[in-house]
Length: 285
Ligand SMILES: [Zn+2]
Image 1 (cartoon, protein in one colour):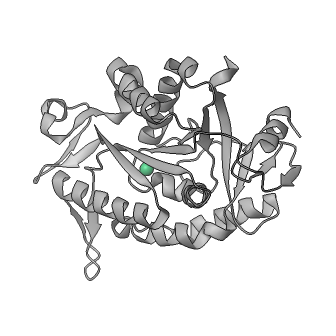
Image 2 (cartoon, rainbow, N blue to C red):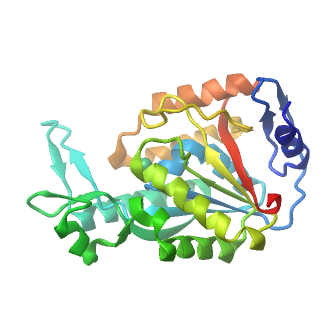
Image 3 (tube, rainbow, N blue to C red):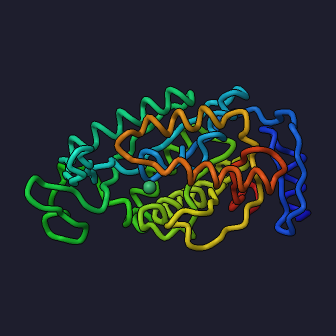
């Protein structure tokens, strides 16, 4: 077992299955040791973190943690498929935001999670007659649709500072977000943005950790990121799926999510598990 996994297993306050890259696993239910029982999940889109860490969210909440889901984009890019004709219809930015935020609130209720909306713009939206894309004059000048586009935020001081402030306001024990190895531009930007924010305030959050989510069988997870931590989510699997079903507009491939959770469960020696990579520790600098 690698040193990082051994240490994490010993210090863990959530009860994890810790895994070395060699594939040796340990399972256990460690007792909470840290005072600040807050955990934050930064996702680009409304359902992202529930897909990757929904069972973990519920498990933390069940252990007395405050769990906060930070939604980075305002989810203005949307469409729906007519059940009868199977035709695609684009929805307006306001309509899409309203639908997706309502679904997110419903899902958060199932998991016992609080939500913070950050309002960074998605890469495109429907203006009623055509789709408007990031990089065009119309997109840049349309301030009514939200603030800076998420894809550029890792390069913008004010955006990094805003995310850093949200983290400092809550001083979470663990911050989870997408993996930098994810090829969806907005997922990847979310990872860079949160990583940059964490680095900026690391001396103020010495006991915090940054974790990336790891998955398999997702088209955007093109590079395999071997996990350091597998969280046993068996008891919370039903709640995760109940939350995912609240995102009615998204047609989430639940069978694929199930297979992924089962795969990691098999690696960990439990029924279902979710995988994470420990990226940074505040005190490690
Ligand atoms: Zn997404």
